[in-house]
Amino acid sequence: MKNKRAYKCTLSIIFEIGIEKGIEQGENRLGLLNKKRLEDNRLADLRRGLENVEYRRKLYKEYQI
Image (tube, rainbow, N blue to C red; front, side, top):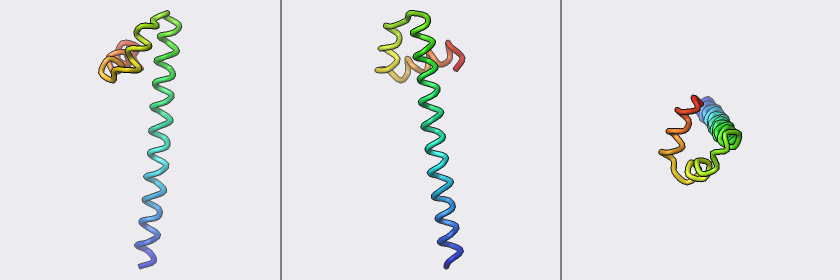
């Protein structure tokens, strides 16, 4: 029983770390996209990308992010 509890605890920690890393990667990706759009003076795209996930995905491909 103790091993099962330790295993669940370990899995929970690994899962939590994975979520945190995924969130951090997503924030970094969005930040880089926004920075590039600002550098290119694409302010309308900046707003539209923040409001529209599909459009943002298109921009990720365009900027190869």
